[in-house]
Length: 87
Image (cartoon, rainbow, N blue to C red; front, side, top):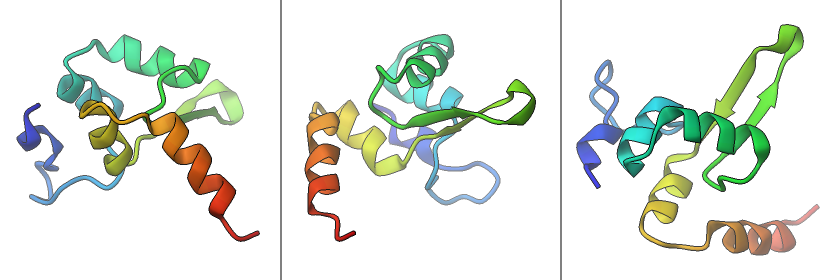
């Protein structure tokens, strides 16, 4: 993986919330796969939600993206974190 892709060219620092097109390039997959995978909930690198007017928004935390790219089972990891969260 090319870590340089995760540097925001406007700020020169690493993204906190990675844009879907950048995530796709980092993973070596098509942006369409990322958009659809997030919308359908089957790509565990982040979330997608449909706002008013049908516009979609995406959240891809950089830590989750990196973990997934390096083979971690992020679905299980986040289930465990949810269980440990104090409500």
